[in-house]
Length: 186
Length: 191
Image (cartoon, rainbow over all chains, first blue to last red):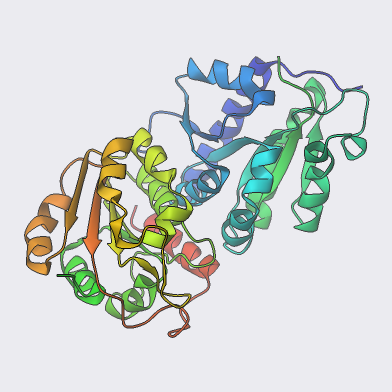
């Protein structure tokens, strides 16, 4: 049975991830970052991850930029990456559907490592997402499969290691990857 | 009066210094000729995304100017980006809108509202630090030094004629992934 993940655990994981990304960036030759914060979250606010977004409001070490659309978030991420900055997208499944052309044109065709955290709003706790009665839950994984985007489910606190793993995978394969937040964060 | 896009681009190329440039749609072919192999990445295939790509670069590299060559039809596709850019307070972003009132690449069909759409008012309302319209090349030449130094985000609606070429009539150029990789490599090498 899936469990809710505390916001603090996700934020600590993101901080560790960004520290690792900063070290990799320096090893690549970028030199010191022009920024004081560790990394960037591009968010189109997601109900499922709202406790994380609320906690990030008070967090000085991660900069959050709220975007009007997921298309923008994906393309801004490409620009940040080209400029040597680490970035994570936090959106919900409906936003993934809305921004499929940008996923294709920017992240896939552009071979840009875009890492998504996608909230599965209305996912039923006792059902596999593929059996959900809600189409927006049911089609998310098949859509990612159709586009060949590697993805994993965050079904509880023990799965947060997948955040760093799929972030690294996006860099290795030079393309998009995603983790799906199964239940509303706490 | 309206300016030739190619003339505007030549003026920019002469004055840009180390600025990153992001052309899209009909500015793409001309920019390839005017500034081959430069610090830029052209956007085709995700219409409306140029300003967001420019914003990401501007946020990542605050020490450089980033100049976006947007189109009016393109901007309408992702109009919310005006608010996102303004909200980001990217001081080094210059958002140039080449306004011709039509979707030139797909056959010059009029955009919704045609030439009556007032993008300057939209950008100002979104919260850009500066927003203005320019219709004469001499005026553009006079104001460009200020546009390249003043605190942004800056929005300029440029009243232009149609470009000589479109991405459909002048195919070619590197694929987007190669352009992005080359741009990233150049920014890294410049560190």
